[in-house]
Length: 335
Image (cartoon, rainbow, N blue to C red; front, side, top):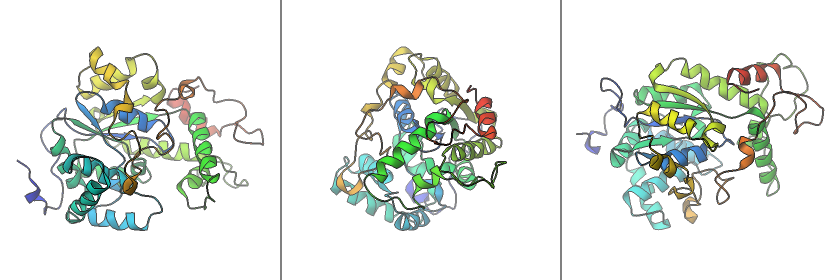
């Protein structure tokens, strides 16, 4: 039996058994400013799953390195993880429990991030952990680290129409800009102005346009998934999971080998019941989608039919989607 006394080992042993267990974790791969948090919370309400807050663990090899990165970031990277630890080990998400959780985490700085994930998974067995930190898709090495440390992990590529994504990025950027100046290195500003090196008009005058980040981040996910065994990956439109039909949800559940009965699916219709669906205590406010908390978990405009043709609402020059964006979106089944 795995215990924390084994923590000195260099790598996690999760997923090394022959074949795949239904308890292997699920990682949702999707850019920020999508409905990934709502989908994570929905899946987490299934009786056999547990939706995690954003842990951002696999941006580093060890917990010590992860803590160092967090100390230099301009956002509260540790909030989701310490809220989870407080919930699991210290009786709930209070400021006192969060302080104890941070101490618990520092005492385990020598862990690999994969082994820490395994410790948390052991705590929640037999539930399937569902993780959706957007940071994991920023670099191929981060996604590769997940697969290397957790060889049995499953990956859900969560799609969204590029128009829905772009409008969400711009809305979020406007919301933050109304409160304070947004520096060029802010993650939202970077999403809105991704470099266009891979596009034919890369020499054109730069225009703030999130469609470039939509293409770049999704193409990176596709490239990673090309290296993943077919049984461990599944691609689905988020719009299909949020529709009134249960077909999309039952398809995902069938792939995972979990219950597909009506009672289980009905539980998933209540993402607002997640332990992380609201703000945390003052010392760890975040850890989920800050633009939905404490707002609605579902917006009808997310599933409205969208087109890949015509001028874009966020551009004043009448331009439409780049050909490369339309091509990738068409491959995903968008029109």
